[in-house]
Image (cartoon, rainbow, N blue to C red; front, side, top):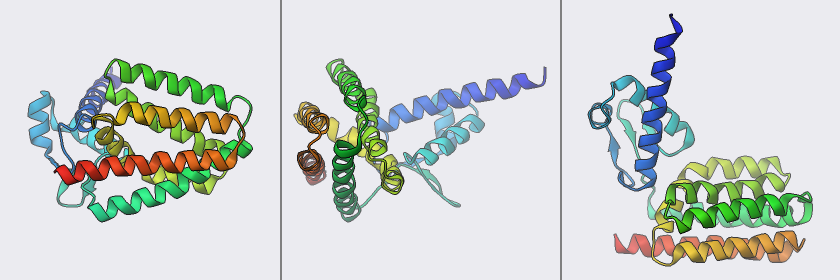
Amino acid sequence: MEPQPAIQRDTLANQAYRALRGAILARRYPLGARLVVRELAETLGLSPTPIKEALAALAREGLVQATPHKGYQVPAPSPEDLREVYELREALEGLAARLAAFRGEKKLGERLEAILQSQEAAAARGDLEAYGDLDLAFHRTLWEASQNERLRQSAENLHGLVRLLISTTAALPGRLPQSLSEHRLVLEKVVAKDPDAAENAMRQHVRQAWKALEAFLDLM
């Protein structure tokens, strides 16, 4: 009978994780918001233990920042930080698309198509959390298809913050259908085995995402 408490605790931690992840990606906790364990426990009707476990998992994912002696908060990058992230993203994502077009295996197009169709369906039903996860899955598939492990690792280091920003830009008027169209173009160029065009399409996609985010920041 000893394992039962551990199973229950894990279940509660998963519940807390899903609830907090959804709230962060839905921007109910904005960038820079402090996440106080006691307050979250009261809000979710849980004890502090599963909340702490959930926050630790979110920190590993990059959606939450843990600061010693200060607790947890949603990351709050400065405009300069964001500019640097998107400059780096453009280079990494562009190279990934180029290498994927050059090295990608035969079924890469099918995998990207399946992700994109699921992403379009998520957009149609207004499920921005699923949309954002699929957006990142589309990019991650290209990182892996590049067959460059250092590139993949570098891109993964940015993925938590990028995932947060996808949720922000996807909610901006007009950005979501535009982003889907940009993904469609990248897919077409990768499938066509056109490295130059695939890189250009991806670089343009990242630049447009940055422009949308800049516009959002100007409104804050």
